[in-house]
Length: 453
Image 1 (cartoon, rainbow, N blue to C red):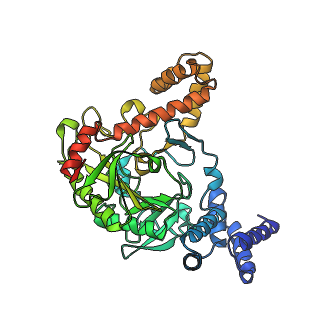
Image 2: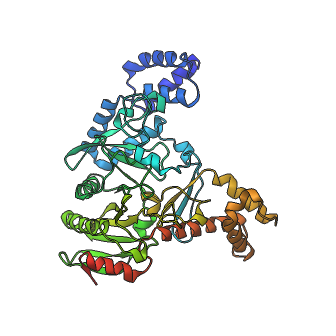
Image 3: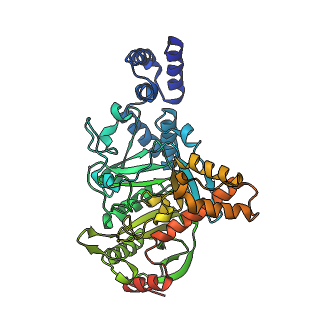
């Protein structure tokens, strides 16, 4: 890096990263030292932009100032743009990820930047960090940690439930302004009444974002279960657009809007302009579900391997008040389905074997980057009228169904036929995750939980 490049970076930081004129000589000299340290590639970019960024305390203070003077949306807009400008959020990479809206309403993405995550045991272990001060990959003490390219990570303080939390954006986000709210205390994932109150607190502070919590169990939760955190952001997901198909009444709050959602998974929606009503109802659903068993349906609340039922709650705030969707989840396994009875079934594992977490359960599927090349080859094979080679045997279902769609004449472009196939498979995966396949079984549970038609 020559002196002109360093001067250009300093000018960029003055324009985009709020570098003060008084500090520009100091920063130029710091960059000179960094470039002579032997770092290269992503490590060098991380170090350069970490040096040019505001200190964590300055970032926190600036966010709080904007929040106070202009409101929460202006504050998050500033922080998100700052994290893009300081290269922590890899927006240029994210914008290259294939993404499309399926005809069934789902959103399908292929994340080329993130490795495929197949081992749920690592989630409960917390993806611990080697070296440094942080206990896991999402602890706040990662700020500035060079070994994980976190020199340019910046977070801001948020109070939820009267306790200190912080908000940060994901470097390889799955959707627009994808961020996580993280407990400042390194404590395991949990969902209880306090969780529901925290989610509503977040919605009160940031009504332009949705916020939700992964079920705190292996195979149905996120990739980090050892540290309490929520996920949210600025995109309207397919679940948020779904309608209630069966209205139900809560016996304590009969005037509150509640119902079974028209959705492939098992979801109850509760709407009210009073936060305590939404929290009360959601917590009673949670309490009923975590102890519910129905062996005929394959639902076992607890056995020698521990608890198996949990909810994934997600909240948005609308002009009519709070809207909480409560997704019922189970991670029970069986001899037939060792990866999970209510997980993607084996015939779909070539497309998605990872945990079906909060984001997929809301209709946005994040598929592994390997698929871009693999599916392109299958498309070529179909157009060339060749047979599927042995090395692609795991894709036989995809090949057969895409070929049939293409030959039907509905799609002249084989790529469009493949997109429709992916949307169809992801919908069937959501159906696999549904703990109640029939409305009458779902309604029977809801009756036991204190609802009536």
